[in-house]
Image (cartoon, rainbow over all chains, first blue to last red; front, side, top):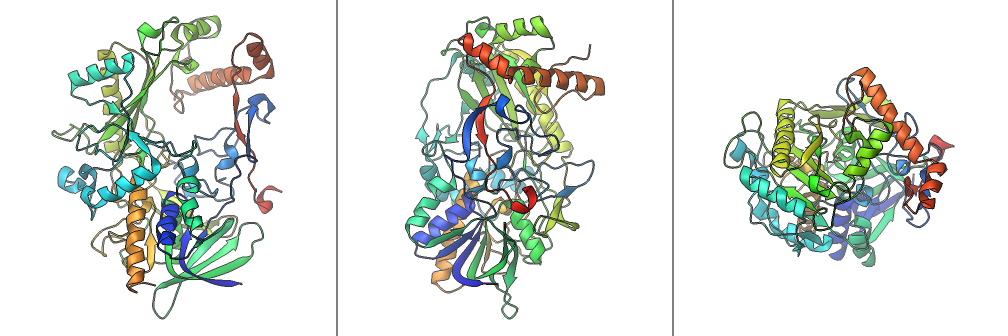
Length: 524
Length: 66
């Protein structure tokens, strides 16, 4: 078993691992990054193809990726296969764990919605009376958000809403289309704000760690990255109790290896980092490791049509564009049957509508599709999930992955709060659409299974009290001072927001603290 | 009678309706993904549907896939 020695070991190459690598190497600290999957070659690994050339003619292979609703035959090879890395869950409580192990992780494919959390989320207990406050506030994280937004080139418009904090934007002053103006007017009647969406533009069509973060780290000469190695466990010095490296296995050859490190950083994604700690039996004096699993509610929404755009009358002035309706419930008043809040994504399209929106066959269906072409208006929900101790992951000792590493058992479900919130979101969307004069064609109140949003969070939560949290406010283990967890597992609450900007800001902040602690020789 | 309006990932819950609606959707997709449809659409000056960015297996694990 060959052994290497490094300053900082980083497990994972996505947004959080990439950010830590960038910050540390730019301060002259050498890092080794281990990633469980291969490096992508965008020229060699993908090409434009018609569905009829594929084995299943554009349908997914039956039985493959049953819990990745985002999968299709074109992208099936980018997701982690459940047969290679299984996980288990209770029969009636499915969980959609959507994973990517390519170098760069899920940062290669994220939808790029870029939001800050507000103090309605950071201080949720103070505001809502349930859950827990984070040990930090927006003011603590705001400077880091600004720097992240600059790197990722976030487009947006300042709106001055406390629940939708403004940022360091590439300002979006584009005009609203006519259909969007009608929704804005409808929102004013119902006291619902309609704002510009916020999105990371990135560079060259990509807003990933592999193009925005890791090139800077490699340029320093301080970063070494190893693909195709699966970390089995974090190693600990029996005398000091400190982390001192990791044991890992080559994905192809099954050769076992290990590395020694002064500091260990887990950035493997919320559930993989948690699985690694559980399998290593570390960092859990609080007993909350693996608990409080949360994500975002996706799935509820509605499909509408703008009547004036039907029958070939759609114009660029009337149709097109996107908007974001930030949280508006439980701000100044109380919703009747749920806590927390949700946002609505809105977009207007001048393209064909889906046949599912019309209960008709053959010629009658085609007539409707022709008539409604270019008139689609869509509203979908992104909702907050409340934290519960009993919503958890644990190690399933009876099942192992392709490298004989015990897998996770996921035990979670949505509760009445999430279902009631979903109903309110759809009903509010319908009310706004009808007030705008749109025809509602289809609606769905049912959330997709937990996990679908690919925003799993919370299983290594941060806090000031080591008895009730895994990490301190610097993403540092309470138990093991030279162990950091920088992915979404540190979240105390989900909010409605896509978590990526917050993960990036937290990992930047954690890395700077880590570097300073290393400089002062408090760790490592 | 079993045809319904529904949103993606949420087909009707009644068994007959689920079958009819999913089958209807799959038949339409298979038809529009066919080479014949592609040729006809291109001949008519329309953009052929069903073209996408296909990802090849990326360095697949030898013990699982060989």
